[in-house]
Amino acid sequence: MAEHAIVAEGLRKRYGDDTQALDGFGLAVEPGTVHGLLGPNGAGKTTAVRALATLLRYDEGRAEICGFDVARRPEEVRARIGLTGQYAAVDEQLSGRQNLVMFGRLYKLRPREARRRAEELLERFGLTEAAGRSAGKYSGGMRRRLDLAASMILLPRVLFLDEPTTGLDPRSRNQVWDAVRSLVAEGTTVLLTTQYLEEADQLADRVSVIDAGRAVAEGTPDELKARIGGDRVEVVVRDVRELAEVAAILGRITGVPPLTDPDTRRVSAPAADRVAALTEAVRALHDAGTAIEDIGTRRPTLDEAFLRLTGHDTTAEKEEVAA
Image (cartoon, rainbow, N blue to C red; front, top):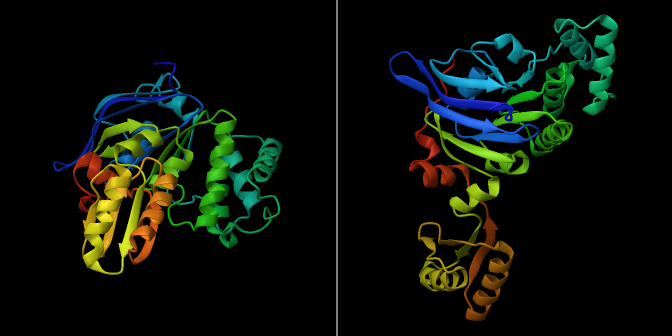
């Protein structure tokens, strides 16, 4: 098991008599990779991270971080991990530099060493120019990068990121993604929880889909997308009476019976090669003289992924129980 940075086997955690937060959860993460935990609120992602990070005790099962048993040797585990939660844990009254120095002192670094480490991290995360400003004046992306910097004070071998881009705009989200990539490039292992297929696709080497406290599917992003149908070609017609003709055209191009929705006047079908399928569909519809309102390709949504992999969508999930 030592060849894996993170291992969990049969983890179970119950709150009260009614809530089984983890129900036999397991995974194995190779060093120097990003492993995504993909699932909606209530699936058990945060509970799994908190259990692996020694923040709560699991009832059954076994877990190791860098070869150390989480339950039996929590001090060794804590010395090797970093954790960034869903919300930035920085002090808004302090400057970015003061926040990092404070965290360094909390980690028992000497004053000079804490200041040196703060400057290194400010430069690494692109925060040097804003180092003297109070964190309360930072943008969302800057705050998350400062939070990531704080979690890297002691260069953890394993970093837990619990939905690090929740609530961020696209630009801030991309900044956080770049910061994560730089950490992994230097050898840090990352366990990332997310609700977004796109985030898992951008960052993760492998993904575990988690539902009702257990991993129900695992693979690379491409493997999982293939299992849930991959990209789709979608056509919106102007006249609902043309749905059948468009469905026949898309079916001939993709080799798969399309889905039709009369209410939205939409026809869609999975496509192994979305560019080729879209190009051929545009040409065929033009030749047929079909009046279309819109045409394009899109990737599966999280709801679609869960519907295919678990048999239900995310709207049925409850909010994650806080310990």
